[in-house]
Image (tube, rainbow over all chains, first blue to last red; front, top):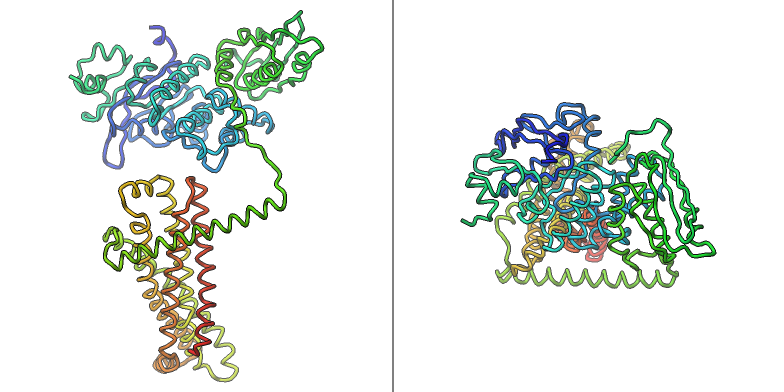
Length: 253
Length: 384
């Protein structure tokens, strides 16, 4: 496959995650390549979101490494970690927009912090990001004044504020109607193709998994480790693992 | 998204506009990333608005060495200008990826009229709005008080629905957990009163009356006021923040749809907890205040401990004790109502929760002071 030729962007080695003494996932080993739409999938409560928190530097793993191109996320000092993470953007499950700011201000905040652009241009960039996610003209709205689907898209616009080359999505289609979820999937594909970004999606939405994912890892809640990785469409054809088959076929047969 | 190595020259972006018959050609070159200085769209605007309207606008980007969102923002501005002038735009000349992003950006048309406009309001308009706001606030408050009264009626008839375990927890939080801070502050207030009194009374050799001053002041009003203010900052703010967060999380809506009355389920137990605990805390604060006075009296003024206590006991009329309890019960009601009212009327954002907590404390303290003034006047008229 062509994608396999792309250089690795994030490599996870021997990763264990725990809350206190309770290990929720162990022995995670996988590689996310440049240009991938990489799916982290698994049943509810298996540790998908925890894995995301480890990948974006919010939670320290119990053991193992998260290797970005620039260095090992949990072994470098804090400044280098911040520098690595500045190239990432995250869309949180519920948008996590700052409720006391308008949409434009939400997007402008990282730009004001990390660039020296004049206010007018920052405002213009904020409008551009909003236009990219289909929210042109909503600059002066507060997050409480727009619908859930729009909050998600505005969250994506904010995640893209600093032109990251890795985008993380936590349950992007949760709480969206099928059409909006489909449009968001299209948007994810479009962004990957236009920006050559690497995209990591945490989800259990089968329609999305098959529509956009070209690589994935399956976290099994029973064995508390990853039981499969690869192209989700191929996994559906070839897997012998009962739990994964169960998951990919919505529990039928 | 850099596709080419960074050029060694300082980042400079260039934009050349040429008119080629009916077409305007915008040739972009240089580095268009975050650090770059980018040109103005003036030249493009001039070409679009020239005497002869162009038929189309094309981009050319052969000389672009690097780009990010800034190039896109620049092109978007040009495209909006072209759109306004009614000129067709061809984005195929833009760097790979940029063209499709531009198409994406203009796919959903800008929502006209969505952008908010700042409109200057006349003085009369503002006065009117404030007046309407006050009217609405009074209406809201009366509605809330009515709901609470109905809930209390249900409570007396034994029909109020709330969780007893929740009430026990609230009583512990409002009572037991408040003891350390109430101890500290009342003890210090007792000390301060004794100090201030001692300096004056020593001049007349009447040190023994320090016990009277501290006793009457603490028992009659200070104990109640200090606990009231502590509880406004501690518990009133907590109630507002808690109920406000429940409002944000739609928990209060969930209660409603289950057929629970939020007033009975949330406000009533908090009201009961504070009304029960405030008088007890007040009695405790009275004792701690007297103890503070005693420390100054016996250690600094050399008053005999037994004498100090017997003098306190004799010189503080029992009526003062009851007046203190009335104060604290009223404060309990006020603090609980202010906290719950602000929490229940909270907006749905983090900002609103902060405002609810702040205004709960301000309202409580204001209400405490006003109530004290009223009770004092009433006591004066009644001669107690």
